[in-house]
Amino acid sequence: ARTHELSSYTPLCTHCGLILCLLHHPNHPCPYCHSPLLSESARTALVAKLHRELEVVLKKEADAQEAARQERLEREIEAAGGGSFPILAST
Image 1 (cartoon, rainbow, N blue to C red):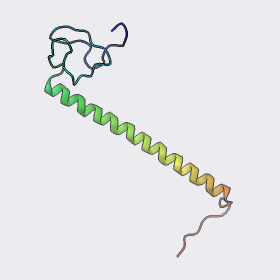
Image 2 (cartoon, rainbow, N blue to C red):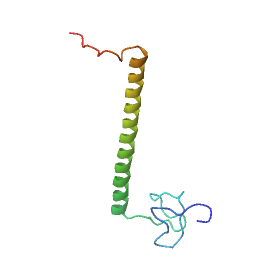
Image 3 (cartoon, helix red, strand yellow):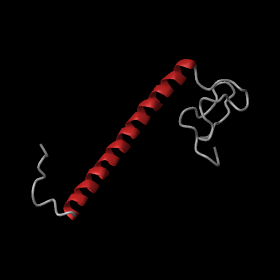
Image 4 (cartoon, rainbow, N blue to C red):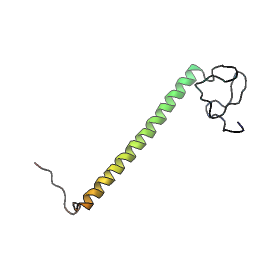
């Protein structure tokens, strides 16, 4: 923990007390006593939380890409001189 920050999930092993840094993933056992760091229910809850956070990030990225695409399309219409009159749908 002097070189890296403490793990935000499991800062120390509950069995032997080994201090764990951010580089040690909570799904791996303790590197010293090889005990699991999280119970099965805690691991399941953590995975569900991470999936929810990932969905939020992916949604934000998709929204940002859509906004950039829309802005690019509007600039292309303006550059083509199509911004003065409405575009009529072909029937």
